[in-house]
Image 1: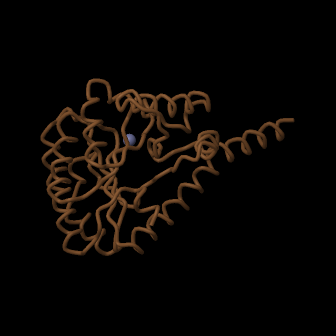
Image 2: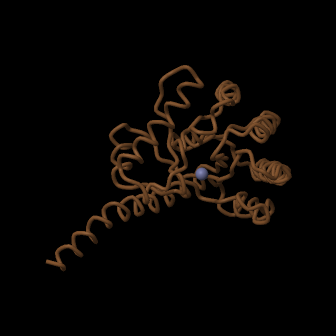
Image 3: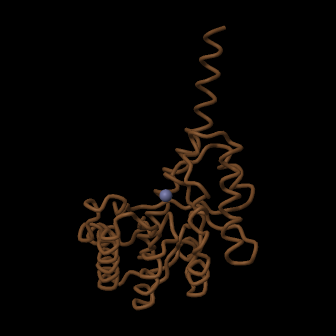
Amino acid sequence: MTTFIIAGIFISVFFYIAVPWVHGRWARILLKRRAGKYNVLALTFDDGPGSRLTPAILDILAENNGKATFFLLGKNIAGREEIVRQIAEQGHEIGSHGYDHLHYWKVSPFRAIKDIKRGWAAIDAALGNRGRYVFRPPYGKLNIFCLLYLWIHRVRIVYWTLDSGDTWQMKCDSRKIAVLTKEAGGAVLLAHDFDRSDSSVDDVIIDSIRATLAIAHESRLRTLTVSQLLER
Ligand SMILES: [Zn+2]
């Protein structure tokens, strides 16, 4: 009896976590190949919008004629709806990063799917329309129910190929990012544009984005949204 229970738990955990994990690894490999094949730098920003950093990033992108994807966190949208509209008006892609930044391995399927829906609803409310936005799982983690839910709704799940390390200021090394992007012939870069308690980090991130865009320009990489990359 105990053996059956242990086997049951093992199989459940395997399907709940392992299948989406394998999907995520495979998706990242394909993404890396595609970015390299088409020489694309897809800048992606998670956890925003931020009151300070997002407008600054929009200005840099406009100066460089580049497009990016913003994976908005539903709970950060309230009070920043105008910024969400600016992102859309300037031709960037709006994606969702869920509502509450939950780790979907650690919560029930119902809570996880509810979080996905709330994230979309928050964007809808800001934009005044109804959409199904490309989705980046918080922490890059999905459970099997979320994966199936997103598949059924034909929603693109987008990971990244290069982490800027900007969650920790000291790890944000723009020179390293630029070199790695150049070597790979392209990348889907993960960065973050939410409001940090230490606003001095914003300057580090802005410098890093400027340096990465300069290298992209030098290496003749196109700066596109993730959907523009995936539709090539
Ligand atoms: Zn995040």
